[in-house]
Image (cartoon, rainbow, N blue to C red; front, side, top):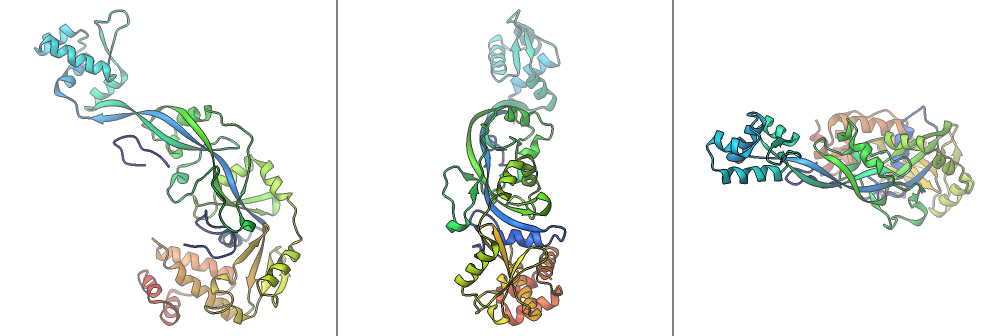
Length: 407
């Protein structure tokens, strides 16, 4: 996403249940995270393309280099010795006039010295030259170009987390992935980009939080292009909006703040009307061959389809990871369920083995994730030893090794 200044170091297939090709997790994962918040009553979920601006900016930065010996002493002579003419420098250092003249021209060229406007023979140090003498290195101004991200509704800059390589920013015109019923819908801002936003972020004391290193100066825009951030927005009671993107481990608080500054977007989504939820799920269950399910609307507003225990398992119609999770259709969601507690407990253990193989996972993170799944399925949280026993009996050798590595 970002091109660093020259010479510096640069700053799984989702199961069915919602468009997930652009996201680290699919829509049902966002709903699972939402259901772990007892104070939230989710109503609908929208997979959207949040509009933003990708702005290419140009800036200058100070590149540090070793000094040439003669240049260093000539510059120190002007800054520290207050010698302001070439002949004074030549006499003081015992150097030839031609050598001093070449050195002075070079220091003027790289912005360390400047000639007095009233008398070109008088030399004055620049701020850059003074800093070079102070720090003992030759600072040279160079040019850098990089991309910055701004919200299309408010022109607020996006924080550094959105520049991580794992966060997918979708270019305008890029085709929408996934089944046509589950596509990310584009949100639209009619506001054209205001280039003052670039200068504003460059002037912020905390600009490094927004992917603008402190060493960059004189930011100004070169070009801008529309782009999109894929996100899941969960609308809940009380006009609450929960956002989920690749830039956050759970809720994306920054995008939630943007929703608060663009209430017209949330109102438009909430006012959208479609088919009646019961009709949607009766038809979906029939088409999925799950017509025997008992369909209920829970007190918290969640629709649930309860199936017999034999419908879940490694070779059954529904794999264990679907038990307790959600099917998304037309912005509504349905939880697949089983009343048999033993089956739900087995599903938790099965999912725990899959979780244990996540890259970089630690023991505490595993236990937190398993506890979340167990609470969702309304069963006791299995102990680590119970997971090891289940892995030895029912898991793969790779899953067992992954768990044993977390002892």
